[in-house]
Length: 300
Length: 114
Figure (cartoon, rainbow over the protein chains, first blue to last red):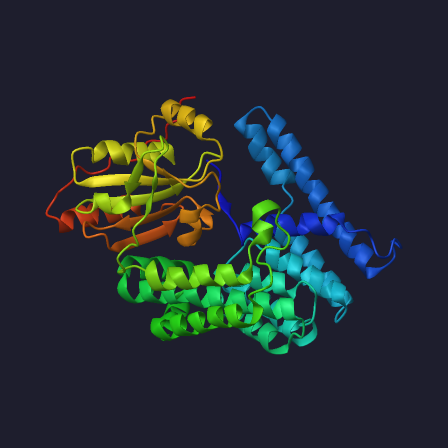
């Protein structure tokens, strides 16, 4: 079974591919953009080469050795991207370089958080109108960092492009919805709290505990309602193929609202009526009286 | 995922428990063959042949697998993308009904038979 988390990983995978198809505005190799592209290509080539060799390696020993010597560590590349960002500070390419770092970051903890903080500050200060800032907001929806919220709010406040503001508004709704769930868990489930504490530290857990899930939920609902009222005509996944390209923000926001209001823990599950694989009709409610696992699955 | 679900269904075969799938495959015939081959014995809703079917859309499902666990009254008690915590949630809910279900054995790392 393959994993498919659309809207987050979906965009993550597709976005670079879409960009790669765009014709080069400036074929001149001496531009900052060319320098950035060359670095991206160097990373991609190194990655491809590594996987090619990895697939043909015969023993575990060979694979371990390969991993040690040839794996293109994104954290090492991140340093070079950040240098590029410094060199061309305030130019759009600096934002591209910093976005690469955000997207490819593999580490967590206080040091990684400090680096992220610097990037977020720079994006807010100099690149709030950048054409990919909406994508960045979408990517931060599941981020544990409070900086994610800061950036998304800044984009909503200061960006002047309607589609970007819509994307950021949707992202903030999702971020707050996720955050409300996490705050609730940390307040009521001791095991979960320990787990989060181990991962992100005591201070982070205290910050979470200071927030009110009901308030977060209310704001998220208001944001999704604002999407329906003001941005409903826009597309949710303009870069995805097929059926997904047709989904409007209004439909997606309505889905989020339905989930928050009717599919939260503690709510009675809505009944499901349909037919099974053999075409026989049945209802979820026929299983009342039993503990039921509903499993959304596919063999694709 | 199938081995995990298979063992859950087997372990709780005589308990007040049901695993209900919502399937998003495109081809019903191919799916039936897969189910036979993989010994998928539990019942599934056919969701119109896509990951964007009526049930998944209504339930706002964007990640696969997504699971919901309902208690005997039909109340949502646990949900997760990826299926984490499914066994523990089911055991807790059975216990609420006064049932000590047989425990899950340690997950063995066994390669799946092709």
